Amino acid sequence: MKAIEVNNLTKTFDHLVAVDRISFEVEHGEIFGFLGVNGCGKTTAMMMLATALNPSSGTATVCGYDIIKERNKVRESIGVVFQRLSLDVNLTGRENLDFHARMYHLGKRVREGRISRALDLVGLKDRQDTLVKHYSGGMQRKLEIARGMLNYPKVLFLDEPTLGLDVQTRRLLWDYAKGLNREFGSSILLNTHYIEEADYLCDRMAILEEGKIVIIDTPEGLKDSIGGSLLSVKLSQGSNDDLWKVLRQVNWVNKIEQHDSWLELSVKSGGTRISEIVNLAREHHLVISSIDEHKPTLEDAFLHYTGKAIREDQGDTSELSKIRRARG
Image (cartoon, rainbow, N blue to C red; front, side, top):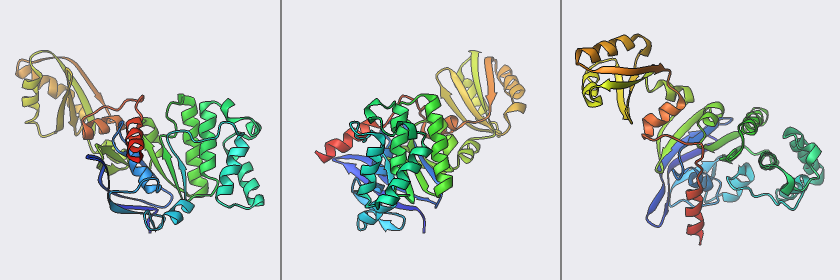
């Protein structure tokens, strides 16, 4: 039995298909990510798996429980940190955790022990009696993640957990999430549009585009899939179309794409090919003004598979708007 099993899961809002027949599995103890731009379906997919939304079609199980027929069992088995903060800012940190623990019917001794440990883990023990409205954004996120772990969930859902935080705080939360994964063995499903976050945290990930899963692989597998090296070529004389026609005939060029005034080449061994590209251009009376070679990054892979760049200022706010409108 997998931690999560999804088959052709679909969600439509009126005539808009937000999630389009996605299928994937998450292993026990795995950190699995959804990587995609604003509105690609990440939040909608997670909300269905967390039983906050009903699917339009398809099936899914979390910890072996059907998300429709056994939703209470699913809820007992998961922890959730959604994109929008849901803390009571007029309660203290400890009071927020205590209220949540009571909802899981944890006895007083167990409840107090888990709350103290959670506050220790996130470094908020000295601020436990401070009202949450006086917490920084990073402290609030830490408290939300701690709250999501109080029931020791088998699966933890993290929807853009570091959205809007500074780089230093973001990295602290990444390390905390990894520590929770190691200590409790919880599977984690992460939604993110941060390339570095996905690369650092995920064992495997799915790239989402317009509600569909484009590809699933490890971060390294995604990088390797687009070639051993990437070359960026810019001409000072001649046409990119002319150079493209020349290079597409070469068997060591895997793929050619044009971005603005640059040609981006995926090649099998970039470092040994620069002089060959320069010579080929010269033979066809084309003059190269700039050429650069680098190893593929996860951002390169995302661009390769979606044709889009991903920006750090993107979140899934449009998805949340769709969901709110659908609920009336």
